[in-house]
Amino acid sequence: MGSALIGLAAAVVGVTGTLVASVLSQRLLARDQSAQFQRQQQAVDAQWHREQQVAELNRRREGYRQVNASFRRYRTQLMNFLWSVHKEAVTPDERELVEEARRDHHSVLAEAQMVASAAVLVELDGMTNALSRVYRRIMCLEEGNPDPDGSFDEIRTDFVQLWERWEGMRAVMRADLGLGSVVGEPPAIGL
Image 1 (cartoon, rainbow, N blue to C red):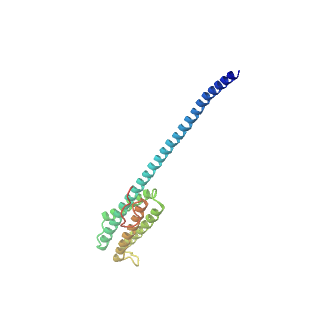
Image 2: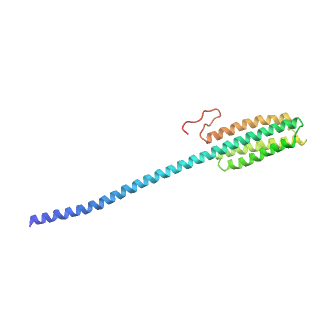
């Protein structure tokens, strides 16, 4: 009877081991599959975040490019108009060119404000205020009502200050894009 009990015990242990092994292997497989799914999901999420960051960087870069071009055009038209005022040869076409550049500047600026960082917004606002002040001073000069310090030569010096302010604004934009934080600094590698 002893050997029968040993045989029965061995059979029970064998059957139990077989049943437990299949349950354990299914649980281990499920755990591995769950972990693999989580890793895949994390990889997909990380890829999505990288793509969003690249898209955001591209939107900012394009916005900054457009606003820089707009500022340059507006500044150039204001300088040309100032020279026409100085020569007393202002034409309606020249005035329209200034107004067109001004409208374009406002439109591009509005778009850039939607994607710009806080630091760039400060620079954009400062540059816009400076351009508006120069525009007003030129128009007052053209209308024969110049500011006390609104002579042709004094307004011309405003353009030097605008250029310096533009260089500072551009440096902040470049830093925001990760291309260097100081004017004249070489671009960062790896973007």
